Image (cartoon, rainbow, N blue to C red; front, side, top):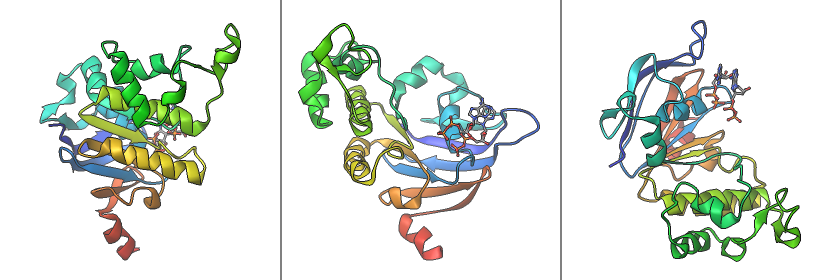
Length: 229
Ligand code: ADP
Ligand code: ADP
């Protein structure tokens, strides 16, 4: 069902500096939890632990009740969809980039995902920089369009668990709002962790966790946290 649990997680990249100092929270299946806090607080570290880029030193991280240390990185990558701050595209068509990770997907499925993300018009074209051999097929993508490619990839992958890591922070305000709307659709009914700098971008989260200096300083809904501050 995709329930994620962090139980008293302690983590340090190197022994003399603790990054997470006893972090506990649950993301119930199908719900959205936002992790908000200043740069360096340890937010992205939480997603790296979920993917097992690193293992916790104390406490545990579970998905569906299973300790991630008992799961291979490969199957974690298959189960988790990630929309990062900056999407890096491969040297191939937009359709290829959408299909990446789902090689079994049909053309119709790719087109449907592209339509949902509103990039169906240019899926046969290539990202700029890779167009020297093909001339006019090359396409310069804006930051928002690149995020739409990542969103289409996520729609096609349909992972049980979704991580949005500062997915709109590199965009201008107007683009941010339209990408936010697309992300809201993708995350609906899906277990989702949103990593963000500001409370104002995570108004719809079921719960918000404020991480400061490796510990949870506050938690609650947007309305509750606004009322307290
Ligand atoms: P946030 O996402 O909240 O900005 P991070 O989780 O990326 O914070 O990083 C938390 C702290 O860990 C930062 O001080 C950062 O410098 C440090 N850090 C991140 N990655 C590494 C790493 N691979 N090795 C050592 N320190 C790291
Ligand atoms: P962002 O904050 O844009 O998500 P990262 O998560 O990659 O960027 O890094 C967060 C912070 O951790 C940055 O300040 C970065 O310099 C630092 N950092 C990342 N990797 C390392 C590393 N291997 N060693 C030390 N610091 C790192």
